[in-house]
Image (cartoon, helix red, strand yellow):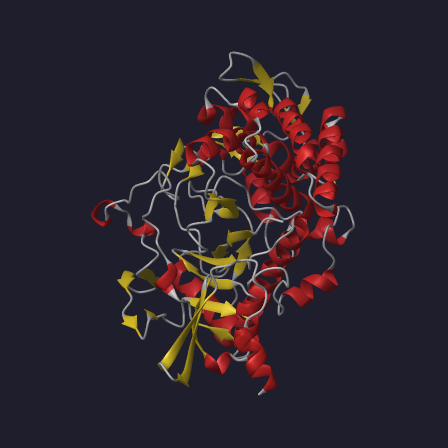
Length: 507
């Protein structure tokens, strides 16, 4: 059992107003989400934020940090940009239009120019899929309430690029033992993060940050990864992020904050990017020496090689002097991970991982129901073949990748509710790991396997008592022997109950 979580920044536009301020749209969407929650939401507790501590053992000087990194005492204001938040009764004051902690244990808030859903902590890959899908459903519910309140509409996109050179993130978080050397952790996990897009990539029309080169590639994020390791998340994006903010007992845990992944509209990529990565981390925690043979010689260059290799045949140089394809590295990681199966959930991840790799090895289109980039390539290929054009030689050729209609279709793939990915899912053309009924429940209820159950119970059942909530804290506004505010520390991510909940329920 490993505690994990997924964060998704959504693209947001007003279809009727191209120049609408995305920060203002996002803040109004969060307000609409609060209204959808019908009072069962809470402000965010900034007391646990520590974004400048680096896992390599030092702290970034605040004067040298970009505004995007200062999540502990700053937020974005729709009119004024970056603002400082005032300290208020033990937590940072939380403007209502910027944050909502929900009864399912999640956080829905404004992250710079995007609405973001940070899902609750979960303990299995399948739970990760369910509460990730619940985030999409909550975002759509908020958009519906926005339409009622604003007499206008917003469109939301689950992707990572806007077609104009900007990229926004879908981040994963994995709790890892603190006694694992971070430098070794970073070196060994990199091979997996670089090669897993063959299974988890969402696909993208265009090559280069602005799509300046025509073509199709496997990963949405690849062209925005610029360094191997670093603290930033929006500039010089690294393969391995070094933020040391465990949101748990620092003596026992570190949090691996993964920013290289794509936003996925299919269930299986979400399932595998969480499940397979968790198993590889178990091998790293066990100091499995077989992983050393898979270390890449040039990781940043390999990110782009993997993303642009639609034939899945390009070889990547290894530090050992050998070379291997992304599929071969993934297969080797799968075989190592077999030795770290701890329960039935892990066994199911291995089976699904192996099935997808086998399909890709036979014929990549055999994996179209499970692998998002393959399904997107297949759909766009059919459209290209349907709209052939005659070249100078008079011969018919498929629509070129430079055709702007393909880029537009790529953007529409990830539109929540009615995009191409949603249509394929509704048509039964996509493998489901979750089902609609459990996703609907997860919109309101937290997972029972982690401390999210405690946070969600307080926010969902006793919202009138909650002054603020964070990942590792719930601040209650009630009279006690020690004063009016009471801070509940939730340092153990696997603690699913709290004595005060029993007391309140009985009383």
